[in-house]
Length: 388
Image 1 (cartoon, rainbow, N blue to C red):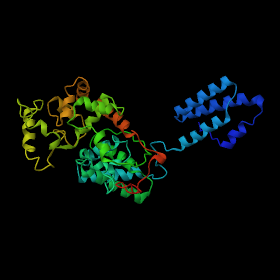
Image 2 (image 1 turned 180 degrees about the vertical axis):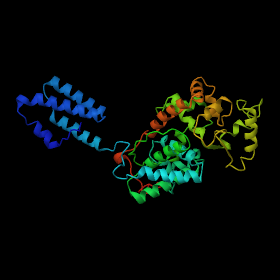
Image 3 (image 1 turned 90 degrees about the vertical axis):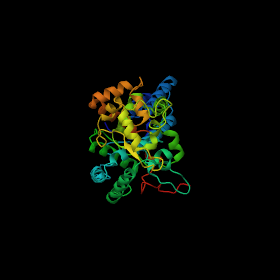
Image 4 (image 1 turned 45 degrees about the vertical axis):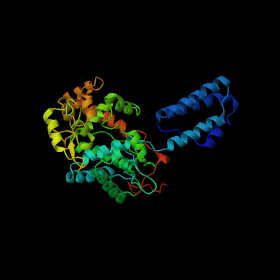
């Protein structure tokens, strides 16, 4: 069914019908409009119009200007961009092929690209939504998200692959594809490349106008936080405990710097030099690897010691064996709120992939900007207009 096409003049003409037909025609018109709103997935507007119709019927009259207000509002609302799978089918039809080629070349050249880009995408979405704000560089007037302390460890390969993709797309279809959409697609394609599940990415995001380091520090969960605090952070963004555990499975690829887990390795307590939840030989190897981490802050270890470059469920199996690198991850294997999901995903990779697909698709549409709430940047590391 095609959306109803209505102009203000048609509305006023409609209310010039003879009084004998007016009430009946009004009700038919409104019921039809409400139905179209429902089809177009605008429940709030359809509810408002339904209430208007109900109130108008009780008063035995309708208010044309009140209806006109809703129609104008409806026109504005539906003119805003909606996320769709084929958003660029006409404006940049080779989008998917170009991104796929760029990320393939980059992943072959640098195997850390997949983990770097997935982490970059998650860090972007968790701070004011998936709007490419993590990609903005700091300037004399603003310290951007990427320079927040928690983001300083984000690998450069993630930023580099987005820059390459944006450059290629600007040559193909300049000023069309947002950096936020490029990041979402690149992360998905790279997850699939290293063995993970394919999931749908709806497109049409706009790039945000704000990127502040202070907001990133306040919004992101840290591996040293108690599990209860991390669960609350996810819940505040609409993600339940199972979704949090599934998203944590992204740690099946990538690495972490020694400073992020050093407290588990040295002077842990009066009774033990290292965290007793760590498998002893694993702890011994990590202690040796990170013994000079204060002098060399780049020292790091794979999150998944068994299959570090493959997206699989080995991460959960490692947690069961005391091979979890981060304290927050290892805690999930014993906490009664999270252990059932860890055990499920450790035993069933299909269940993990299904849960991860659901959760990451939910992340990908978190607080996205559309229409005039954002822009399509000319380059991903800078706003189109300098923000002071």
